[in-house]
Length: 387
Image (cartoon, rainbow, N blue to C red; front, top):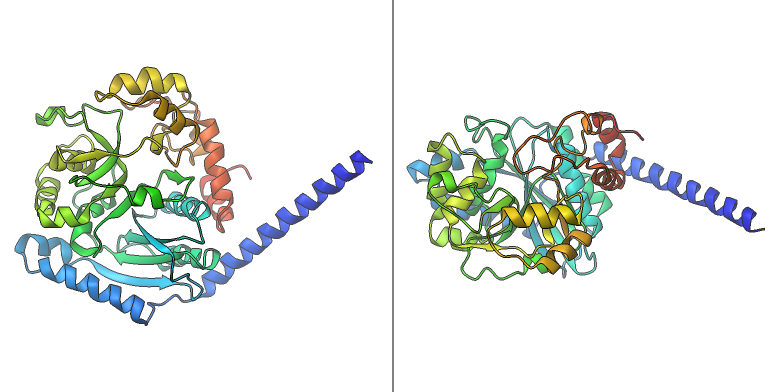
């Protein structure tokens, strides 16, 4: 009897999974047929006007005009079922075609784990001019999956920083340096493409700055600005940030950020170094659960991480963050986890990576999150994942 019930349960589970997969696929197909437009209502236009008002304050500046003339507000979209009384959490991401799918998986993970009855995620997505309409429609298909707690604002960044590309970094990583000049908010969360979110972001969004320009997660590469003459015990990884846009504007730190981006050609970590150098010493640290790196074990945390970072850390808090992270940053797996075909074929030689980490469990976590999107079939095909 138990065997019959067990077999029946398995069949039901398979049927439900298949049905769910079909439904998600149909939603995505439907999204590709929809022409998303700028919402012609007070909410959309209010933001559009605020965007223009802020940008116009700086666009006549001879130096800033070079950057700001490229930026346009492409669209402001949400579903008619959006809960108007939810608390808004604003998040900014840079996206290009290379990191398109990982960014969508990251956004989807935040939406899946948000408190849909309490918070609305407002994603500010910064795209290069070259990105195609198909990509934009895939982004906006998320509005059909999360109709009650998602707003998508897309900015066309033109060909900004196209001459700034250096070593392995894309020019889109510099976009966030401009955010105080055109995003009319007091603060915003920034996230890289190789980030997964496991908890609601409201607590992080409401952290106090205490006169800091930025809050970030302490990095392994604590000597990242030593060669510039600054020995910093607060060197942060720029992959997960809470940016104090209001204070950056008040003290006009964007001039220093952009001057360093334009004229300093040999920076070890590009805009991460710029952020650490220009904002020092007004840099705060995020609680350890927001941005924990994908360590292989507690052993790695204790004997690698603590040895690298000069500032004393709360070891108990670090272990708890490792076991139950709010945000996981996939910075130690080289190559990135979604490149599964080559995950075991290369040695981890970049400074700060863990040589013996195979990253298999983090690959599985990422694939699980990718599978819960409406575009998993495309992701699996693109990265040749085993389905």
